Length: 444
Image (cartoon, rainbow, N blue to C red; front, side):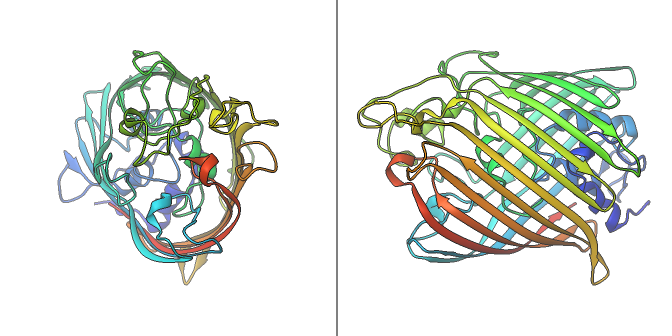
C-alpha cells in the first residue's frame, strides 16, 4: 500500500483554484477494502471541501480519471467532518452576523458559546467503464432551517459522461453545484461573503455541458426556474430546464518557478435577488410569511436580477493570493424599493461582494501548516441606510496533523448586521461582532 504524506494531502487541500486544473497524483491510495472499493484522502480533500473546490467538480473528476487518481470500475468512499466551538461576542443583543450560521442560532444575548457541526457526511465516487463517472454526497448539518430542511440531506448526486483521453467535451446531469464563480475561502470554517451570498447549489437536476482543454475550460449549465437550495431563482418558477442558466470560462497561465495564475469569468441569468419577499426555502415562498420568512411586503415587486463573477488566484509553492468580485446585473429588489409603498429608494446600488485573501505555508511544531487572512465586503443598498454595506475580516491558522485531520483556529471580525430575510425591517449597520472559532476538519 502506497502511503501519502500529510504534506501531500495538505498540498492538494490547500491548492485552491489551481487544484481543479492540475493533474492529480498518479498513485491512488489503496486500502484494505481492496482494489474495487477504495478510500482515497486526496480525492476526499477536494470533493468534500466546504471552503475550496466549491465549483468545477465535474472537470476535476475527469482530470482525476485521466491522471490515474480514479481508476476504471472502482467505488471510492469518502467521509468528512467539519466542526468548531464558537466563542462569539456582539455589542447588540441577539445580532451575530457570522456567515456560517443563521440569525436564529445564536441566542438573544450578547455572548454565545456553542459547539457546532457545520457539515459531516459520506460521499461515493464511482467509475463505470472509460466514460461514466458518478458522485453522491449525503450530508448532516446542524446549520439548517429546521422546519423546511432535514438535518440529513442528499446534497449532490450526478453523473458525468466524458473521457479526456479521447475528447475534451463532457456532459454532467443531476443535483449539483452550479459551475458559477469560485467562492474560495482560505479560512478553515467561515464562508467568504461571496460564497455565502452567491454560491449556487441546485435542488432539481441540472445539465452541464463543457469542454476541458489543457490549460482552459468552458461550461454552460441549464437549470429549471424553481428556487435552488442556494442563490438561483427565476420569475417563472414553473419554467423547465433552460429557464435559468449559467456560463463559465477559465484559463490557467503557467509561470516561472512552479507558480501559476488562474482567472475565471462567470454569469448566472436569474437569482433570489429578483424580488422583495426574501425567503430561504421553497416552502417559505409558498407560505408567503413566517416562520423562516419575514412578513410579506405590502407591495410585491419582482424584476430579473442576474449575476456576473470575476476571480483570479496566483499560486506558488509557498503562498497563494486570490481575489473574487461578484455583482448583480441590477439592484437587489428587496433593498431598492420601499416594502410598504413600493416606491423606489433613492441611490439604490447593485448588490456586490469583494473578497481578497492570502495564505502562507509554513511549519508549526514540525507539522505542515498554513496562515491566512481573508477580507470580504459587500455593498447591499443605498448609502446611509441600515442596509448599505457589510464587512467580514478573518485571520486564521491551520495545522495539518496528517492526511486525515486538520486543526484550525479563526478570529472573525464583523461590521454590520444585514440578514437576507426581512432586511429592511431588522438590518443594523452599527453592529460590531467578534468570534473565535477553534475546531477540526477530518476526512478519509
